Image (cartoon, rainbow, N blue to C red):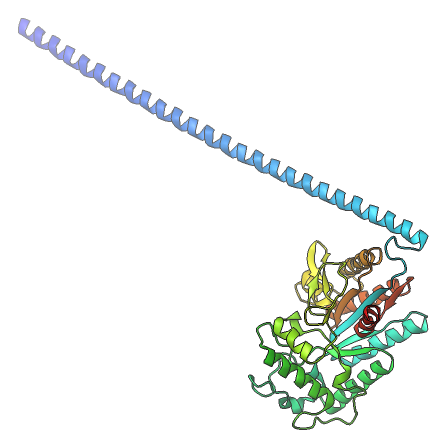
Length: 402
């Protein structure tokens, strides 16, 4: 019996020990689990705190940007108000502070000049301005291929290209080409200038002097109708190539060889460069006067004093604006304001010529043509302002320096 009691006691102790050990292990596991949970909670808390800090920082950056933008707009508004007040004072005196007796030249020009409808519109507008007592002479930079009827396009042939190769279209029928010549003759008779936009609208920035000369000489032969084969024309141009002394190159492309070629062909001026406002035209190293377009800002975007650049800046080169809509009116006012600001900078400054270039294309439902007309009406009648051709400006500059 004693043995049995001892065995039972030992078993009881053993079982109790097992239970104690199991409880200890359970407690230990629970403790580790709690530690892991606490660690995870700590990590989660840190993540939430980091996310919160990032969010707070983003909000702070956004508020800083908004504050900076508000300050910029405020400064622009103050500057604009200052300019308006200054302009009012100057206009009330009817005299600018600098060079009050110096003529302010304004050059309004067209590149390409293909559309006969636009020839009529531009010439009629200039005629109406003159009838109202305000002089206005345009410069028309002509693309030579527009004087070739389509059936004779292969007469245009640069030696390194196939006959008829051009990046722009030709004249259409003989009748349409003759009408263009009639319009050019009318322009000459009414005091406007015919100048060169060369022929095929190529980028010549990598051309040699010989290539520039060939393109210039081909233009001259088209004007004079002295290509190896005669161009079909029933009307003769009122000018010849010797009368054409100015150029704006296609795509404003240029290099030193262009100016070597222009010097050799005795050109007077070039309008293919871009510069800041206020630059007085001077002869360059080649003896060529430079009348540069200028950099402008329209709707916060940098552009040039040329309609195509506004077209790209405002609607990415797609005609999406419709005449008379609020968007059209705003876009028109933005361009007009930029032109007027450009004019005022020169008029109330050193009176460097204002250079604005357009095309015959009625992009965005005629928006830029309407701007040019409004601009001309606004500035061409001001005291000491002469809206005239580049050749006339050149003549005035030469008379003063001779």
